[in-house]
Image (cartoon, rainbow, N blue to C red; front, side, top):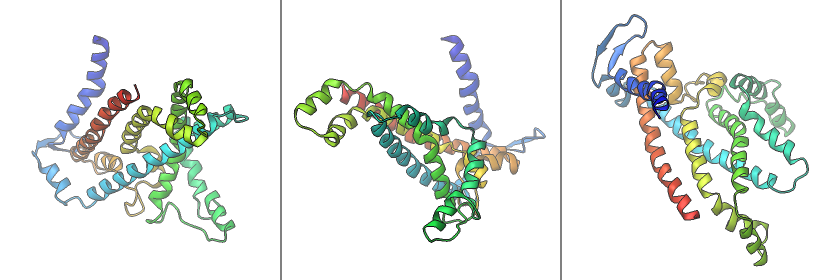
Length: 281
């Protein structure tokens, strides 16, 4: 176990500890100058001196609460359909999974065109319904929802594969017993499939929450956190403070807050995974 522990300590434990350590200092990250300031960074962050921190927290919570259930719902729906003998289902599975392996730059470029207010695909669709052009990514009322749509499109195919793999592990005897009892497709799904998928669902919620809290590349490339900080997530604030504002100490403070936020959500979910596995067993 020693090689694994060394790698874990160097690439995971040390960066986390060092981030918490830097959050108590004022430094510029360039000259090597640093001054111990105690809890001043935390007072600035929590006390309202940073006018955008709580806005970033609100956007991050909204992003997580919407993207995770949406991805699960779409992924589960696709899995339920493609688990049946659908003609060409292998091609459909590959097509729905493809966005998960595309680079963030490609995805951002494609969706920037789709959301173009002049000739984008989304704009043309609205115009075909009798509407007018929409500045999807430049409007404070629609920007975060447009970005959420990109996230749901990108990861729902990956979740679909997890569900498809879990469905193969459901004992066939349960479906046979349900069929003998006269259960139709929907009752088999609700009474057999979904209860058996509970451990996988909780695991996917955990992965989804962690992924949503650390979302950065696509939304940065799409909006840079704008307009007017409408899509400003905590991850973007960390990057902005550490590199654009040359305040890595304060960026480390927001990183520590995000770490604690993630732990508060992840630890109960880990307990639910064990509980769901015991219940299924």
